[in-house]
Length: 130
Image (cartoon, rainbow, N blue to C red; front, top):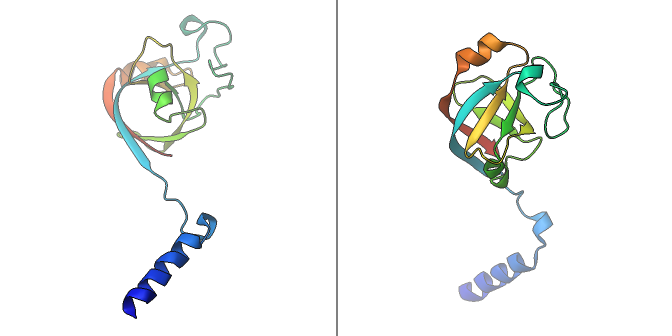
């Protein structure tokens, strides 16, 4: 009798549509990357310094990053929210980098050249949810 009840319970679970089951748990991804910083200055870009390569208009103080194409393939697509170890808050993917860069992010620092130079280049771990 117990085996029959267990079999019926298993069959019922298999017949229940997925939409009524538990919600999908987001997967947290993490990777170590080289990080640099960039500014919106005419001498650091081609064309409009406030227009990202993705076509998004950047604004002073916006928590934006650019990512290398290999990171986009890992799920760091335009609009994805990212946490960067050592920096406060959430950053949003708003720009892309040339294909010559691998495992690299560029952190937007508006017109603050001193902040960008002070940041320099460092290895950081970034985290995001899919």
